Image (cartoon, rainbow, N blue to C red; front, side):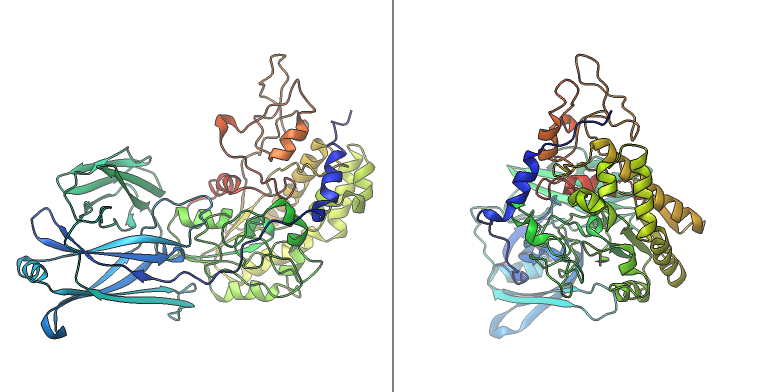
Length: 554
């Protein structure tokens, strides 16, 4: 017997999406600038002075190397001494998603006895901060920021402490690093508020010491506290250095449902965000500046969504400290668009010319699965069929749209024209609350069939550089056998389901039609893995985290 279908009320809501007043969408804002703040004076453990220079940086520079030129200026404007600092910026706690436009980082310049005396006698400080966004590492930055400030440092402590920042640290696997504790404009007594999750962190004397756990690769965070003040140190362990990563594919790679600002899409904007019939402009995706779908060129964000930390590709890159990153994915695209002769083939060729070390992609769901989920009437045989006729209908449609053939073309292109390791992400399972004509079992079955097509096509190449990545199962919270085993129960009657649901809010409300067996979630009360604003189709930032966690380390 077919499982319960989602309610008719859903379609009534979906049909009048455009009837109300639309919520205000984020505007295309100019990129934040570098702003050098007013310098302060700190005292190091040895009693000598330090110059503390707070700078606000665009969020796109988090984790990147910048240059700061500092000069101590004496009477008549003559330089007494100068320094050139190159530091990898620590943007603090990485949000999910990260909607900040800028972050603060305070640089420290240590002084000897003579320079400390001249600073006390009124010498001024000139600071010039320069940051560059060179996405392809060709030495020609796409964006450059700079700011300069000159003034006499504050000697009187401000209401809020000014403390030097700990740079973004990089060490080898199992390695150990020792760095100075933050110097402030007043006496502090730093302690580690908690152990770092993937290593040991401790304060010894005036230094912070971190020892990475054996076998760990990725990013760890250390929390320092003193007198109510919290500072974070970010450590990338076993990072591969200057690795070049490129991504392509559809909305699951692009991070559809989040604007390029990191702001989630509103349900009221769904019709305006839905990809155009052709020449998609990647609207309402985390790597795009477009907030309204129309036919036209794609306008990507300045760092292709890396700093917003939303898509699984961006989260994977951030986990391993990758900054040479571009995500060319376009929401709504299908395999043929990226193959020779396709509308986005030139983007495929650009990726190949940039000689990436890794290519990340999710591709193949369009057009068939998107039709099944959003316009089931256009796939009538699936809408009226029972299993196993439903499965045959789906297979027939895969053949009709040339799914396997077009996937072969894309894979062959990337394998033949690059030396990259290619990670092909399988599709997650989501049960939309708008899928009136299809049961949860049928949608899960279609998802399995699509992923099997991907696995089979990859297997035809027998190439170790082409690798399938399997995301965790996105629990529905009901019995969806035979599509997925039911081995979990939260029912007093013992009904078995696939696990505590991680589906969207709307879907979970609909699934309460199974009152005796439905198991809501997520377990532990965390964020749902699927967004609600697109009727429960695409992963949330939390869902993308789950997907990124399955991709092998570079």
